[in-house]
Image (cartoon, rainbow, N blue to C red; front, top):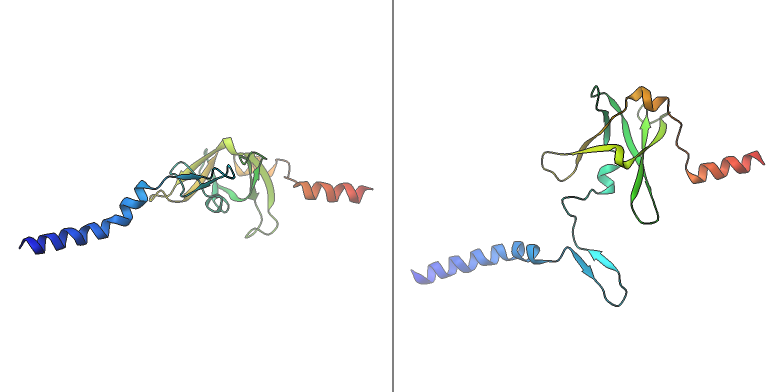
Amino acid sequence: MVTRQFAFAAAALVLIMPALALDAAPATVTLRATGGAYPARQDRSQWLGSNLIGAKVVSASNDETIGRIVNLVINDDGAIESVVIAVGGLLGVGAKEVAITYKSLNISRTTAGDAIDHVTLAATKSDLSHAAEFKTLSQQMTEQQARR
């Protein structure tokens, strides 16, 4: 009887060891030789860029779908400064791209909490349709060269 209980306890320990190892693992590993850090996992307070790009954007005032996030503007420090939203068009064709500051977004997670369900913005589709179109640095340089 004791042998059977011991075997059961050993089997249970073997099954939960991987979970215990995950909890004990540091979130970030720092390498002293290079000074770099390599995060081992995503924190609950962090978003993946792949979840943010493609997220549906809705208006806070009337729940109207405004568009989808198509790109991120990231500064040299690695912080997201703006998101680029495709507004209008048909299935993304002919859509106008407008940049919105990241701080103006209200991001809602899915029920499971592992992804983004939608992004709410305190603007309407009409507001963004009338906003200036976002131009990448490459587009600006191409326009400058064409004027010469």
